[in-house]
Image (cartoon, rainbow, N blue to C red; front, side):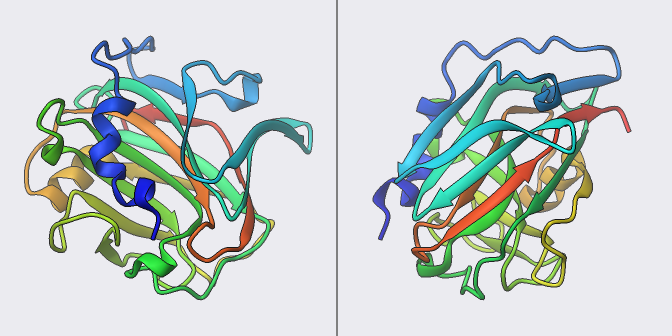
Length: 225
């Protein structure tokens, strides 16, 4: 069992410093991950077990973020308070080189994902109020399935909720673009309107399955619609 990964929810107050970064953005668009510009400003690696290597690489003439996990579990975090009333919709693109699994993702032995993008809401000192929505490339759960993270506490709407956005039926080596209304998703899955998130993260991990995976992430940004 991965202790660090198990207590990811408890670590969120330390991941988010007390001085939340101010968002610099246009009125209707906020770029969080400008990987195509060749910069990783405000992004920080957090290791949970082993290491996932993150680096900017050129793919077909465009810079993207590459994640390579070999029995590792590291996330890349951007601490930033985002006003969801202004920019509620998150956009990103991704593709994977290989698939994991099939794994039992509802059990700690299978809590690995070739790719995931997630948003975090810090509870501050009240760590039990930390929340996260994980949009994952699932190895065994069909698109649309929702479940609590295997390492966290709570029921179907536990503090860390997993949402299958892509599954094993989707092709490797193919770019897919995603769009999610975070304000609506938070209300649906946590039963309350949450006007702000405190950060965005990406993570490719393979520590529980003791395997390896390579994934790529394009720019991440928020918009009004």
